[in-house]
Image (tube, rainbow, N blue to C red; front, side):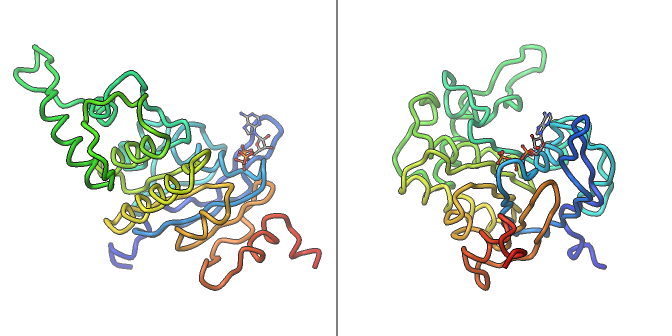
Amino acid sequence: MSASDTPLVEMRNIEKFYGRIHALKNVNLTIPRGEIVGLLGDNGAGKSTLIKVLSGAVPYTSGEIRINGQPLNLRSTNDAIDAGIETIYQDSALVPQLSIARNLFLGRELRSGPRFLDRLDQERMNQVAGELLKRVGISKNIPPTTPIGSLSGGERQAVAIARAMYFDSELIILDEPTNNLGVAETQGVLRFVRDARDSGHSCIFIAHNIHHVFQVVDRMVVMRRGEIVADDLSPKTSSIQDVEDIITGEHIAA
Ligand code: ATP
């Protein structure tokens, strides 16, 4: 297998117990480079647990995770970020009082001058932030010094996606990024996700709204009661009804 054929992410035989609750049952999932994978399932199916495991937020009980073919020892969210995995939650960890630029560089601030002065390079951060806002397609002229608190939900998601793209995260996990957004804002977020894919990033996209999933993903994975029950559904060949039947288990009853 050549290096380019090696999948970006491989989860192998992942098991997760919360006490006696078996939240992930022998999960095997492969994410190639440059693909948007939709992760679907009813409440309690195990989607959040799967992405928390992959983002280092909760430890898994057994199994193996490989990134670019290399086994990964995930003990914290920082381990995941160092391995190129960035997770954006619906209430993404942005600080409303701080500017767009400061939020983009939160925890990874650019500094200027000698190290001991520990001075933030505000000017450079503002400049990079301005360029990034253009790149993710925020067309309105929003200065990078604007506090995050005055942005709309869709614009905040755009800032979070811009951050993942700037720090060259290979895998961007989006957990319900279109929740509570209006129609135009949702379209904007779906466009940013496609832009991220087109510039070589892989994405895992979780959304309760199956129509949003169909608009953006290359492939769909369905979980039910902790198991992956389908992992290669295409929005081109499956209908929304087909996928809903798999989510609820209706296709078995039929
Ligand atoms: P939703 O769409 O409702 O968020 P989900 O598919 O993300 O659901 P999970 O949140 O991963 O599902 O839950 C999977 C199972 O694990 C459920 O039975 C849930 O009750 C259980 N679970 C999740 N987190 C914990 C926890 N911290 N402690 C104990 N049980 C948990």
